[in-house]
Amino acid sequence: MSELQFEKSLRGSRAYEIMLADIRKGLGHAYRIVSADDDLADSFFSLVAATVFCQSGDACLNCAECRKVLHLSHPDVIHVNRERDAIKRETIVDLIDSVEIRGMSGKKLYIIHRADLMNLTAQNKLLKTLEEPPEGVTFLLGTANEMSLLETVRSRTRAVYLDSFDERSIYDELIALGKDERQAAVAAACSDGMPGKALLIADSAQYVGYFDAATALLARLNKSSDIVELSPAVQAVDDFDEFLNVLSIIIRDMMVYKHDPSLAPSGELAGDIASLGAKYSDRALAEIVLLINLARKKRSLNVNLQATVDSLLFSMLEVKHKWQQ
Ligand SMILES: [Zn+2]
Image (cartoon, rainbow, N blue to C red; front, side, top):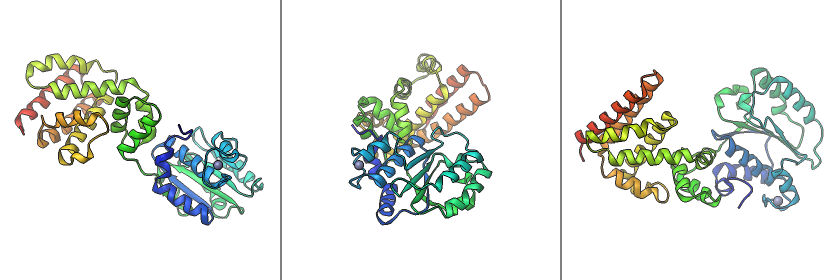
């Protein structure tokens, strides 16, 4: 098992291809690595740093240099804000002082985690260094929200987008990490293509519970007397909003699957989604999405939980029958 999470997917990503090409021909001054997934960005930084310093030039993850990168002890890989807090001017002032000190290897990589959390004075302070760092110095700015960066910072950094991954590769990675098949399938389906989120989900027993509750609801909702039986189970979930998110994801997967079975979710979930899909028409599913949004809104307005759930289930049943296949 790789010490680097999602190594395989990262190596195959377009973002890595771009960085690798630049490492081979000479790195630029500054890049901003754009990703909504902080954990994924961290793995990516390690992979890039290993590629820069690896003795075999290939991020083997085994040589002395790679090991130092992975253990965060490489003297020429400087991490700033690994804790992903707000970044103040003083932090950047210290950074600028250290930039002038020559690296042991002649190269230095500054990794600023969540650089979009720099306040404006800090960003302004960093500008000149980003533009003209000493020779051999490269900045990697982790960025979840590009719009939080000043236009002047953006124009001085090359954007590299760490796009979301497809469900299948996330599933495969989770299996490789030793997660059980069902956990992995649910996590991949609910991750929105973000491996870090998938890992969190795979490690939470709750999500599989939500998934099972949501699929049972969709499978068993046939007549009004079912609601009496199904409603208490839905009301009993720990986090109703999260349950609604999972329910929406299942509905989305059902819609996708009906139109293109090759886009079926991973592993054993495909069968669940296919058989559920056969019970609901497209029109019914589309209306259920709206009903779920309505339920969310009611809860945000503090409408009583039981009333919200009962009304959601009644309306779902109604549209299911109204728009028969
Ligand atoms: Zn190596």
